[in-house]
Amino acid sequence: MDHLPRVVVIGYGNAGRSFHSYLVGLTPGLELYGACARNPETRARIREERDCKVYGSFDEVLADPNVDLVVLATPSHLHAEGAIQAMRAGKHVVTDKPAACTTAEFDQMVAVSQETGRVLSVFHNRRWDGDYFTVRRIMQEGRIGRVTRIEMNWAFCRMPAGWRGVAETAGGRVYDLGSHMIDQLCLLFPQAITSVYAKLQYESADHNVESDAVIIVNFEDNATGIVQTGGISHIDKPRFYLAGLDGTFVKYGVDPQEVVMKVGDIDAAVELPELYGQLKAADSPETETIPTIPGRWRSYYEAVAAEIADGAAAAVPLDTVRRTMRVLDAAFESARTGQVVQMHESGDDAVKAAAELAVLALPVDDIATMKTELAPSASGSMT
Image: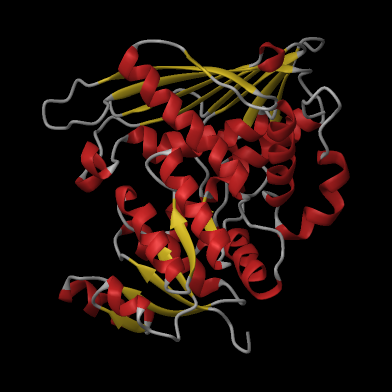
């Protein structure tokens, strides 16, 4: 390719405007070539804010031979169809999370990527969150011994608005925030998944998506992950709670990058000291404050640019995305039937996927130096 990959963002709502077009515009290896919106007022806003080409339809984007990469910042139920159309039209694709509504849809997307030779990537930006980096480092260093339970919570005191409040468009907090937490969980516990149980409640008269959700994921070695999300939480729980054989780690608050990114200055993100995590080791009378490692969402699109231009390792390996999709499928099936869903996952595949993800989730400058210490142990757990 004799030019920087030319990128068009499809959709200019919150995700398209504040996340994708902004981050693409910051990436030296990519050109924000255009954005697509059906609403004339939105198209005028794109011209004013991004100074790029504006498209009125997806078909118009696919017909433009100058476009190399399309970013699907669209409602989740449109991801699979849009990605397949774009790849068949010769475009590389980034899709927001969740990658699709089901594993079967995602498998179709991967098949077309392989068939066409086009890059397919999923925007799991929370792999570059500072709290997630911090949790992973604590586990790698064995600060609290072998971790047997991870609880992750991300909930609100309001139901989702717009298409995210509608089941038919793959709305709901499980698809939205749950996919992030499950994705992180599947790295932190790389051992094979054995079962999934989910309890989803539907208490809102104005929405047909879940008002509260608890998902329990069991792994080999008796490890358990608990993911909670929803719209009826009026007091925050810890974002992360890690129970280890030799201690406990607790962390409140959400990564600060989103707040400052929405006002156009992601590099100003700083974690407040009062939100630093707390670690209590079993052999110590004191609780230790753990400063948060800075997150770096910029790394995602930098890796995508390298993948397209140089054939570098995938920003988000697709087998790791498939693992997340399988858990989401199992969670919805469990909630529907009221039964525990047994999983049949290869331990070797799980460890390999998690090891790849662990390396690629690091800030760009740290990847080379961290590969060795991120290697999984023979037992299939991170040391």
